[in-house]
Image 1: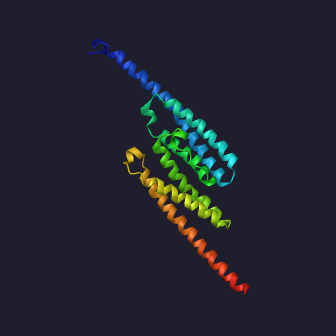
Image 2: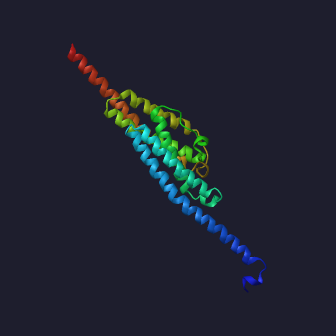
Image 3: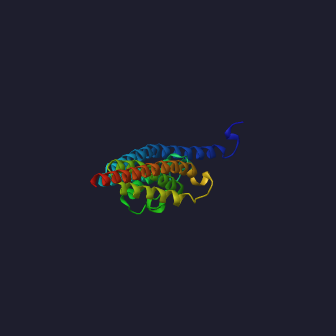
Length: 212
């Protein structure tokens, strides 16, 4: 029996093929755009660590442009949009924006402002807090203890804000694992700051005795 013997079956298959073809074309546009998002986001974060806020913002703008291209491409294709790579790109973009905000002491833009999924926003924010460890260690090496303590407080604030989110991983995109990693980074960073504080106090006490 051929499809010609079933009324309308051939047309139905053609409709499905057309839909799949459109979804595949959307994927071919979105996937390389998402790779650009991630690459630019990483470069933006590195610029923040170099204390070049202007360059960080400019590169983050390029990351956003690539993200909007990807989002537009898959807007009519939910199966492609939720395949995972768009979520990862949104997460990395959020991380770039959040790192810049946290380092600057500015409000962190929310999920609606950044036009990303809530789960991607939460994971991106958590990863941004972990990324602050590098900035914190750089400040400790410079002897800027108060600045390092402020960064540690920001990391702690992010963890405290997100740890109350108690939903299945299917909804949060695996937030719990990301927070577990942040907690480990936070404790190591707290140990580094505490050690430096104690060493600084000891050094000042020794110097005070020497003066006398």
